[in-house]
Image (cartoon, rainbow, N blue to C red):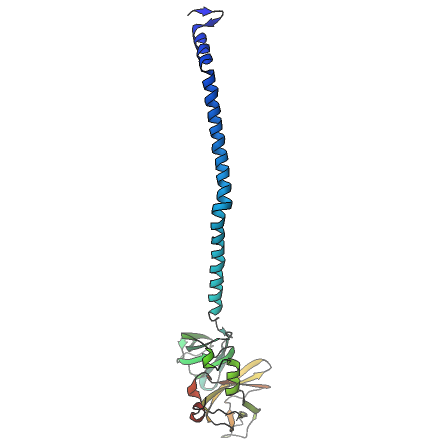
Length: 292
């Protein structure tokens, strides 16, 4: 290989090529760098444009839509009836190995009332099925009295509710005001002169007895009203029973006398609860139903 001043022919050819192409090389390097800068700044500017001018309004609408949908869901949720609350099921042993069973229900809804079927599961045995209801913002008591289970021994019971049917109260049904509607139709019916004590001997036995008067000072009469009577020792329920009042006329006072089969000690309070569906026009006596 020939050398010239210490450089080989290859070195001279490479130097010659560099001298002839140096301007082009620097030109394309600058073009590539400018293109890279254009791409980088274009990406940055596009990101800013997309974030503040394109995607932001669209994403803002999505957030607004989510808020609107949540508001609609909240409105729907508020319009749905809330669950009915239940107390502990109480079971009382009575004579002849029979059981009295009771439970309290509470309807927290001010615009909904409910109908249902219910029974009690007594240690695996099913009591007969009954029909029940709860008016808006009120309480009721369900009972199964004198149930004779097949198996003996300690008893517990659970409430079984089926065929639940909710009904919304419409203003036309209650003359525009539910509370006033109820007050006019039952606000003047009261329980008075409640007394609990030992009655005169009946068939040689001195039995506990509850007496009270159902007083109807209102303008409406009723075909049938059930009353649940609870005897309490302090705040503890010790016995429960029911009576039915039929054909209670306006202005009438109906005395009620109820005997208890067990000797009950320490009873110091009597609670009497009326059970009547005042939203059903068929509960009123005909003379008053025609004038509603």
